[in-house]
Amino acid sequence: MFLSFRKHLTRIGELNSQMHHINIRKGASNNMQTHFRANVSMVYIMTNNEAMNQVIAFFRDMNGMLTYMGSYPTYGRGTGTKEVSTATTNDGVDPLTSQGALTLSRDGRFLLAVNAGSHSVSSFMITNIGEPVLVDVKPSGGAQPNTVDVFGNLVYVANVGNAANHFTSNVTGFRMDHNGRLTPIPGSTRSLSTFKAQPAQLLFTRNGRKLLVTELTSNSLSVYDVNPNGTLTEPIVNPSYGKGPLGACFLSAGVLLVTEADSNALSSYFMNNNGTLRVISGSVMNGYKTACWVVTTKDERFAYVTNTLSGTISTYGIDHGALSVVRHITSTPGDTVPGLPMDVGVSKDGRHFYTLNGNQGTVSVFSIQRDGILVRMQVAAWTAFPYLGSQGLAIL
Image (cartoon, rainbow, N blue to C red; front, side, top):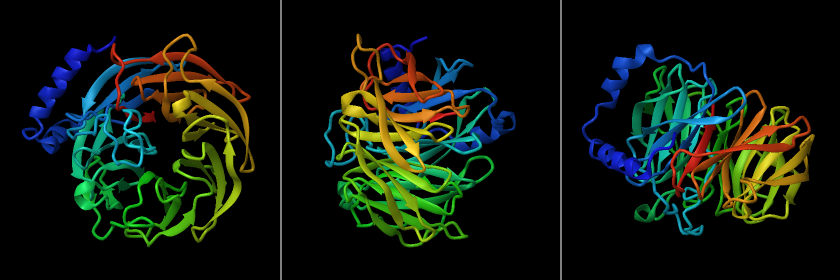
């Protein structure tokens, strides 16, 4: 069931040597007729490996339990354990400092992955058995992309920048065709609130009319209107209530939740039609360190926040956007090496919660009870050894 670490590294080396010899478009086109929307349930994570980035796929059974399925190269490179900037500690955990490094389209047909080490984004089509098939790799429009989102056929990527371009950050847009191939949108590149603000998450609103970028280092929340041609307006820059805004999610009623890694808290906002944000609950702290990722239950009564350096997950109650801390649980069992939870997701049926443990490369699986209580079921692994540098989680 586990891929041996030595075999894994050997395969990465072989794949890396093939990067300049594969015709992605031709290979994808020859097989396109056999690829349909998946009729299985899956969980995907990303290795962010510096030699060859890979998507790791797990089959998800009817009880939410995971079984390793396979690894799939992005034909791009990650950063490994290296952080994308000096703004965060280089500890091998959360090197991209982002939510949304791996993203599924809303219809579940396509999977998008950022390759921060080679400044590109990869597009996969999901087969009817849940297998990701690579169809395209494109330059990201900047340096070190760390978060991506898709709405319909519109894809946007946020780039951190690097030392070579003085960490000039931006967002850049693409059109995605019915086979998952990407075409850059002319004139779509926009700056953030400042030329070197570090993006942490890029996220479309529920109706796709606006795009939000959380800015970790400038403590800003930039909101763009999406034009009919797919380009963006200049951003409306909102101050974050707390410091270090990182993960975000939208609720159905126009409420926005944003984690604050430096304030160790979660804030909620109401988004007005003009892109300005009104604070509902400001910096509700949970008593643990580095509140970084957030997702809600299907009924939006609870939010789960991972406190990475504390190894815990906090449950917040949500009442018309107002937040309250309810309870906490560790990501991994107390009698094992603590897992440091990062990226999060909830299954579409609302029954299960998943989180990637960044210091292990494992995925913790929980059932969600009616009152929002999490019950740990499994810690699933794809390699027999701890793997540092993983980033991103997406649930089909």
